[in-house]
Length: 428
Ligand SMILES: Cc1ncc(COP(=O)(O)O)c(C=O)c1O
Image 1 (cartoon, protein in one colour):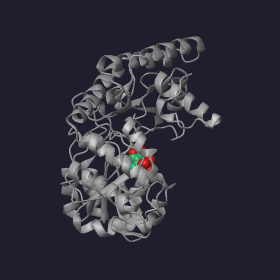
Image 2: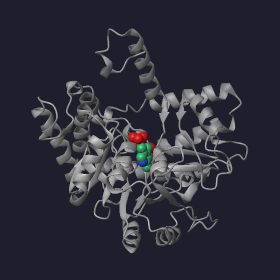
Image 3: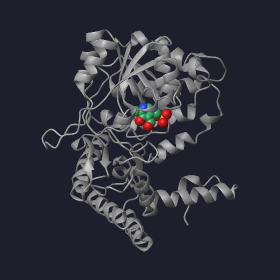
Image 4: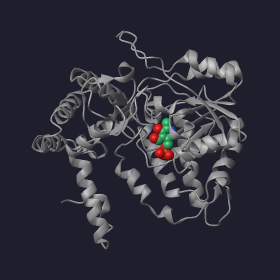
């Protein structure tokens, strides 16, 4: 088994080297369809593994609580400059350790405990930090949730899109202090202008959680929320193809409060090695080749949707405008749950995650849906033709899910497909 070339320094730790070699094999011989994952560049990985991990730098450039931060200040400033330029924002905070931290920091910065937040329903696409009972957010702030329109058989207007009337009605009735746009499982375009209009009608602040489409926005393949939102949060590791982490963009008037909420409000010392890797990713995302990449992600997602629909899967919301598709498995096979589909596809070398669909009769642990995304395999160079092959392989695996020999044959076909697509070829 060959090891990743990036792990060469871990030579003294046989146990870990062995595990990394196994994970390298998994990532390069199976298909990665988790919508929130990607393959970062070797430069991003090198920065993540750099000597900046050795430095403590609580505070912000020019205002640190420790000595020796002259170079680190420049690194963090570079990341902030590149990020504000990339999205056309007034101010950037690149310290959040994750997307969840970024969201909680914004709530902490702009709201008082008990204030009302209007966000997307969790069972219709919203994220845990949009008010899940399991999240600290729901214990501190009062959440009200908007949803999607009902499903319709009209092909021109399939429904299951953000219900703007419901959003407006709830906003007028509940008078939220903050409206959150953005989702974790929603395949359609989210129009920031509509959210701004509703927020202005009720005097609410607007936060756009761009965790998923951040890369598509940077590449110009999805609308940029920065001109409309008071604050934009996102993760750097999904379509943006950077290291694991979060970031916040905001209007100048909120900058001080946002910075104080991240540090010292939420976090201690920033991860400057991750911030350096974010800087690398922001530069990569500013290149013309990145726009070609994000356009291809969307093209692939649409082609994947067409191919999956022809195999009998129902596409929730009728299709995709981003990197993601949500499949209703019940039309394919009424007995098939999201849990069983995910586990079967794992055995066939196709990595996905189960997900609830709107009005799902099954629990979040079992579900009737599957979420798939095209960002990672597009990085590996796959195009519409390969996604049509993956759709056929998924259907074959799920139709023959009790037959281990058939699943092994699909797994071999998947490995054969992957052998022609090195995830790092794009970067060399
Ligand atoms: C919409 C949305 N917000 C926030 C997050 C949280 O990001 P993280 O997992 O980095 O905390 C996610 C992660 O999937 C997400 O989809």
